[in-house]
Length: 304
Image 1 (cartoon, one colour):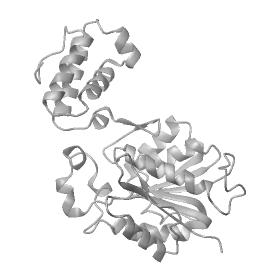
Image 2 (tube, rainbow, N blue to C red; image 1 turned 90 degrees about the vertical axis):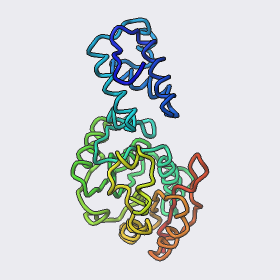
Image 3 (cartoon, rainbow, N blue to C red; image 1 turned 180 degrees about the vertical axis):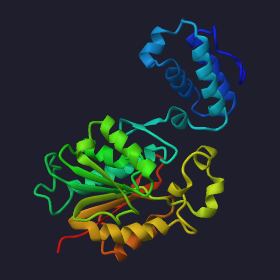
Image 4 (cartoon, rainbow, N blue to C red; image 1 turned 120 degrees about the vertical axis):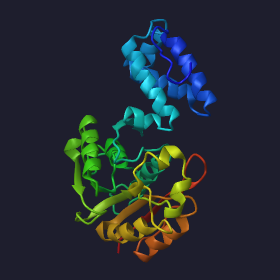
């Protein structure tokens, strides 16, 4: 099958195989997965439904939808953008043009944040994370709400506050909270990082823009051409956001509270220096992602 050729009259299984081959020849690493996801979305079927319907023929309408998906994917658009949805921490999240596509690397922030709460010296049970503790959590630059909503799912009695300068991003985060049944514990505020928040908080998290301005042009096309640039651009040296949010977060934290941020490659040392300058203690080493790159950095406001 070549781009623009109709799928109408093909069986689902034949369309899947031909689409996988097309994506493979175009150099798409996740060719088989992408083909399955796009066909499933185009036909409104989950994996089980696709197996059951493997031998049925695609209608002209289904073919047209799938052809549009193929055109966009071969043009470099990520599957998550085409489908306007992405799974993070096992949660299905809606996306918009104003939100980053949440990536598996960012789950290290959630992991380290939960560990920092577990070790909070001000908690009654420092060795065991009490699921009924009324933690207060802030997510600065929340985007789709991915990090905050993952934490709220893990902590049923916690309360979360997400901030963003983009009203459209906040609308998407609110929609995700509602879809996941978390809207009653999540509040979203339009402001620059922590400017609209009042403490104290037990935990502050953030995945800020950290790419150096000059490096954006060299990013993968799926990121450079489809993620919002203001969620990527960290300024000349990549640290503009950290310099702004770390002092703000430190002031918001209560005794024993922790700040956890995502880091770009090679940035953890300077982030730890900024945390130290703001009065936070780096008691936990940076958490590496699946590729072994230090990805999440934490600092704690030690009790007096």
